[in-house]
Image 1 (tube, rainbow, N blue to C red):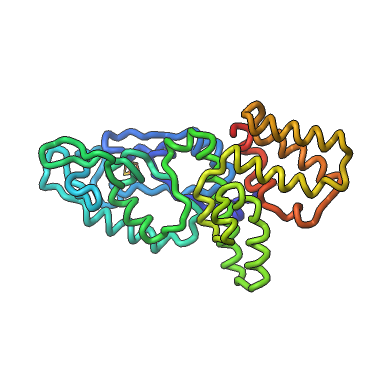
Image 2: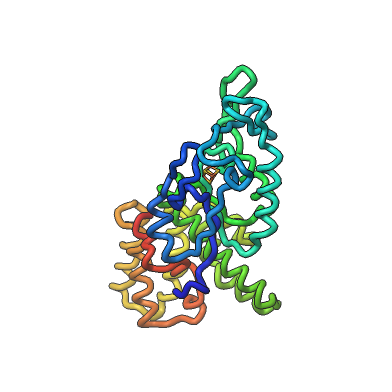
Length: 297
Ligand code: SF4
C-alpha cells in the first residue's frame, strides 16, 4: 500500500513512544507503533504539551460533575486547564478533517475516552468516571469518527471491530471526496450489506447506516452471514463440499476454529465459481489480509 493511500489515524502521542507524559516518559504501544504503522499514517497529538504544560509537569486530574468535569492540578488546585484543553480539542477537530480514526490513551484526564477517574471534593472517585476533556471536545465535533482506546485494542474482537470501522470510514470519505452520486451511494450500501448484517442485524434490517458497525459482530451474527453467503454456492458445489462448508461454519460457531477458516473455504469456492454480487462484498476482506485480524476472533 503506498503512503498516499494509507488511512490517516490521530493518536495520543505518548502511544507512539514520544516522551510527552507528565513524568517525561511515554506509553508506547507496540501494536500501534509497529504493526499498524505499516497500514496507517499516524498523526500524533499531545494536548497537554500543546497547551503549554511542559515536560515534566504537575499531573492533572478530573474533579466535580462527571458529565462536566474540571481538569485541575493534583497539587495546585488553582491550576485549571479545562478551557485550554477544550479549546484545543475543538481546534484539532476543525483542523483534522481527513482522519479515519483516533486511538486515545486510556485513563488520561485529557485523552481518556471512558471511565477516567473523576474525584469528588472530598477526594473520593465518582462511580463510572468520565471522559477526558480534550477527547470529549474532539469527539463532540466528529461524532461518527471511529475512536478507541489503546488498551481496548488488546481485545481481538474490539481490535477487529475498530479497524474494520476505520477502513469503512476511509472508503466513505473517499466516496465523498470523489462526489457522491445516487449510483455510488447504492453501490456503497450494497458493498457493505453483509458486513452490516454481521455487526448489527437491526441496522441491516432497517437498511440503517454504517453506525451499526460500532456494534461488535458475534460468533452468532457471523455464522448467520456465513450461511447467507454460502447459499450463493448451493447450485454450484458438490454435496460433499456443501457438507464440509456446513461443518466448518459449525466449528466456527462453537469456537473450535477462528473466523478465518470458514472465510478461507468460502473464498476458495468463490474463486472456482465467481459470483459478481459476492465478489464486491467488503465482508470477505474488510481490511488487509496481512493484519490477520480474523485469525484471532
Ligand atoms: S495521554 Fe494525551 S495528554 Fe497525556 S501524555 Fe499522552 S498524549 Fe499527552
